[in-house]
Image (cartoon, rainbow, N blue to C red):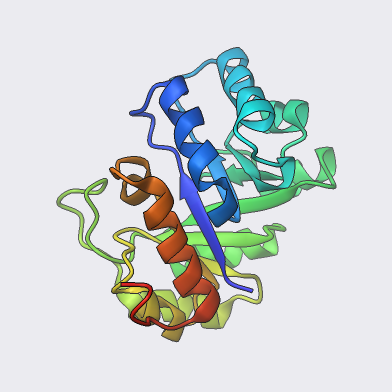
Length: 208
């Protein structure tokens, strides 16, 4: 089953994050709390608030980079970057947690899978406002990664309803977005649209 992930941007206040997550929770498979500016204590507090007040179940919560906070919250997923602990180290310390890894090349993808990752975020696939001036990797690079890996590969970067059929055709098992939802005037509507298209694998009149 294809998955839809939403990642926090670090630009919203904690109160805004909670309110957005409350509205999108039914339409996301995983919400990533990626707030690099927060201390571990503040990140834990925000994560706890999402679980208690935003109707986000623990299995839908991912904590980026901070395994300690993910374990403390009972989050279903920890998502790792290139500078994070290796997936095999995470697995040895938290055997029950799902492990995602952000990758940007075929080599990084196969290494992350070999180290024990459960899924990969590959990007950026399309032009993205969060990566200004950087050339997107495109759907052919996504295809090569998806074909080389046995674990799910999700596309990241410039994801819209228009391009979802392209990433599905390239073998992606889902997509992740940041500003497309977090900065949207109506985040629940955008989330529902993208979530529905990923589930159905097609665009129909109701999705547009």
